[in-house]
Image 1 (tube, rainbow, N blue to C red):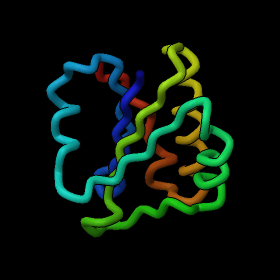
Image 2: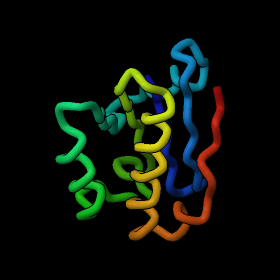
Image 3: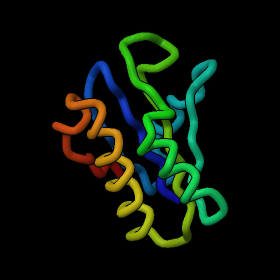
Length: 104
């Protein structure tokens, strides 16, 4: 499973394949946005990202998001993350300008 962090005010997209990474533990803040993408919902979630269903702004409710991508294939999970990143970047140029950082 790939866990990815997207931050808007401090633009970054960071990928984590190591489930024990200490950075992942930071996702436990109250009301943290989490989107899970797997075989059962990939089409629906890609449509949501494409249609700007998920918004980003410089406020606590919309400033970041965690993505859990679970396809039992690390290369495919990263490819899906890259595509989601491109979809987000169509609407948010500051996120489009950053590369995906492979953290662990």
